[in-house]
Image 1 (cartoon, each protein chain N blue to C red):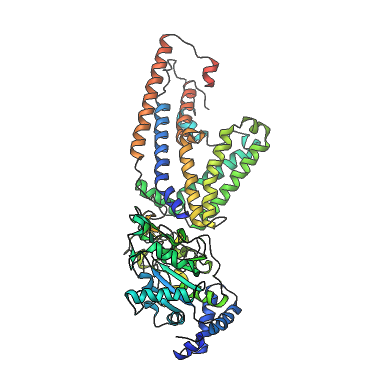
Image 2 (spheres, helix red, strand yellow; image 1 turned 180 degrees about the horizontal axis):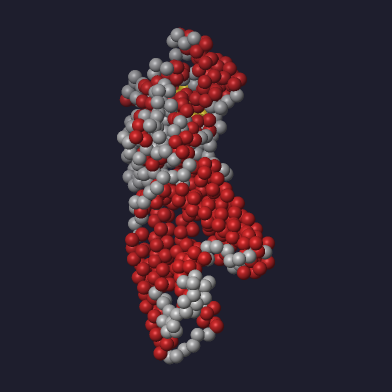
Amino acid sequence: MQGSLIDAFARQGVSRRSFLKYCATLASMMALPPVAGRAMAEAMAAARRPSVIWLPFQECTGCTESITRSHAPTIEGMIFDMISLDYQETLMAAAGHQAEDARLKAMRDNAGKYLLIVDGSIPLGRDGAYSCIGGRSNVEMLKEAAQGAAAVVAVGSCAAFGGIPRANPNPTGAVPVSDIVKDKPIVNIPGCPPIPVVMTGVLAHYLTFGSLPELDAKGRPKAFFGETIHDRCYRRPFYDQGKFAKTFDDEGARNGWCLFELGCKGPVTHNACATAKWNGGTSWPVESGHGCLGCSEPDFWDAGGFYKALSLPADPLGIAGAAAVAGAAVGVGIGFANRAKQGAAKSAHETTTLADLEK
Amino acid sequence: MTDLQFLTWVRGPGLGIAVGIFLLGVLWRLFEIYSLGRSKDLSAPRRTPGASGLHTVFRRSLPPPGMLKRSPVSYLGGYIFHIGLAIVVFGFAPHILLIRNLTGLSWPALPSQFVDLAAVVTMAAMAVMLADRVNKPAKRFLSTFEDWFTWAATFLPVLTGWMAVQHLLLPYTAMLALHILAVEILLIVLPFTKLFHAFTLFGSRWYNGKVNGHRGVPV
């Protein structure tokens, strides 16, 4: 498909008005000034479709499901059609050598200009043999594809932080994209899966301004990951009032009280679920009655149990019992030693001096 | 190490180590102190009203006549920050949850805004007491490293906890981890410093009251 975005939209029956509305929404979600909506619309309307190569590594395709299927009928889906997605194994019609050829051609034709999207972590164990495509290891493919990329977008917690494959004990030696690609701008869009609008927001920003949005210390767009779930949660007032659901089916749960005690990781999770929501704004995990798992944070799998409240010990207090016994034993031992000393002093008729009292 | 990894460490292995050292230290010192004993006083006890262990336990909680006026900061500040600490430690919902998890005991939480206020008042009282310790020559002369150190060890958990709740300076995750770390440092030093008065306070008052009560002196 060739031509500018606005033409493509028109062909698909999207009016200019709804396109402008979409851009304004995106701009406000990304905390850009109101005029940015118009700038975005103008830039995106005129933009040529950038080539995008999407490499899937150790992943479950949940990210692809999230970004494409669940929003297919919405305008976010349209945006997706508006980039030239030259390689995406799940979505592309080509297979085998044809697919590989398409990837190589896109890389050659758009050298230095294409956007590389990666989902899934990269295994380094056994020279990367744990995950290969077309007989080549993921790490090799990533290095090759990153060389000619304008920027890399790491989609999903696996690509951004290593995700599930990297969970203890990390049998495949999985690492995130940022451990391998060092010389290109990287945007991390973590989440298991990430929110579709976050993905399209980053793409829209790239199309509009020709640059990546402002990122936080973990490489995530600040506009979407700037605040925690807890701070934006509609159940927050219940937390402040000390009203908590104790089980998933008690009165508190039915009243929609805070899920902190049921292990909600909202306070330490930066994501836009509470504001952007899921499935076209229908709902999100906390709204449907389950605490946040913290899926957009590094190593959330090993963060001490999904159903354990944040203020509880992450592990059982292993040495507590032994330490108590040891402490008591030491105390009793010293007690006996002191008794013996006292007895000896008594039988020797020692007197107490001022210095003794200073001890 | 990311913020969440740091938090998971302080909630996991870090907490295990801290609680282990705390229990070891507390039991060690309690057994050591209470097994010291004293030789029996063979004199006939002199009975005086108000002279007993129990009397002293309560009497020492009140300032002796005139003392409140002479050093109001010590008494008022001391009361305010101890009560404030109790409110913050035992009234905040996440703390109660931890206590319930460790001991099975629980009670209703106070509203977090009230706990927040208590934390601010506690820190203010502690700051005033520190300033008083610095300014009063006698207090400063009597202060050792341990006094300054235990002040900091007590102050930091309150400060970091309050800053975590208020989202100040660092992201919540990092500040929460620092808060838990500060509490762990407090747990570790508590049995081996003057902070052990949390355990020995009433015992030593009773002891003093009883020894002096035997001689007919209400202290």
